[in-house]
Image (cartoon, rainbow, N blue to C red):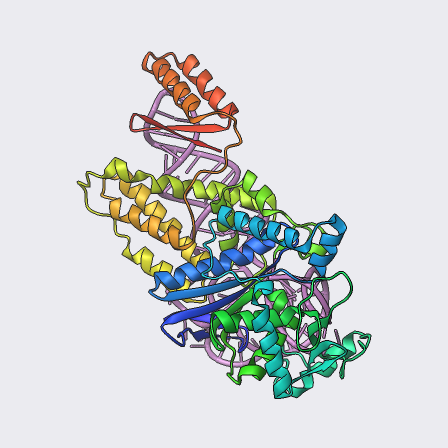
Length: 457
RNA sequence: GGCGACGUAGCCAAGUGGCUUAAGGCGAGGGUCUGCAAAACCUUUAUUCGGCGGUUCGAAUCCGCCCGUCGCCUCCA
């Protein structure tokens, strides 16, 4: 039984999909810049959920959107003097490059707001017709007080929220708590025709419209960062449920924690301290980044520090080495190493609200068993195969980290051969000189069973 | 002010009433192996879970207070 924490009820609940296929919507990114490790965190968490649900036998249809019309995009495009579409195309592509680099599987659908404009306008129309929204001066607002359940996700009360901050009453709003679903066009902005005049969609409505279009009016899982709980997801719930009458819009609301940066501040784009995914991938393997993230539970706030990713890179080495063992012991003469109990621990941990730290602990315990089994001459092939499968569920590639040494594989092999000759003739000083040369170049070597293995640090 | 999260070894981080006299990883010390290393394995590194009280046969886990850190309250994954 899979249990997931539902932000809506604030408890862990048994996960049972509504239909044959798990319908999962995850809030994607606004495409106006390269993605940073905070986006990577969210992508990796929901990628692992996607993979794990499939591992447990579910079919999954994941939708992850791109917000490609919004103030930040328009401002950035204007600042750069490029057309909005050119900017958004560039960063959609950049997002995919980063995701691919992190071995995040593509969602089944990656819709863009501007491509689903008909559905967005249609949904707004339904809300206007139903009385929960109203148009005013070419804009359309959601009438928040028409929804008695408003605030159920964030635990907020409308009046208390309004007390906290002084709001400029936007002209045309009935109530300052109301939010825009359609914004009347200003000069020089991208705009679309609508029953209320030319304009563009507000932020929240696109997710409701795209979820409806690509998944249906009631979905199993809706995910995103914790920072989206209010107002974004609160508004999505209000709109979606008001339009469809299907309650709840999403059975499970899942929210990943926010990255912490080293000085204790929350990472945020507005602080300008984003750690770019592509530059991280130049330094570390995707596995190291994933391990660093997945060694914390997804609802906590992982600490972003270079040294912690470097530590994860060292940890990955153990797993990679064990995953490469198979050929050495394929004769399988000894007793097989037991691995089922580790798989059971892995599954039990993952079933419990995706407890990846515990699942990873089970993997490391199995790694130790395999090394011990290998040294004792046991048959480790099944256990190694198990390691490959379990690490695959977590999206590890078991590929080496990026090469920063500047030395080719052939050169390394050649030097190792040279060292072997020296060792065969017991010219230890010569052999050690070669080893020092390799270490200097960022290559570590290990002699075992008459063979020398090597890896890049 | 409202809503919420957190404080576990040098560092990261699970565990949330007895199965744990606290997983796993990184780091560090000792040992086995090795020409020497490395890797691997063995072993040591929290009698204790921010502090003080309370509930209980029993608490890191529940309750209260206090100290400290952080997030959200209409930009944000």
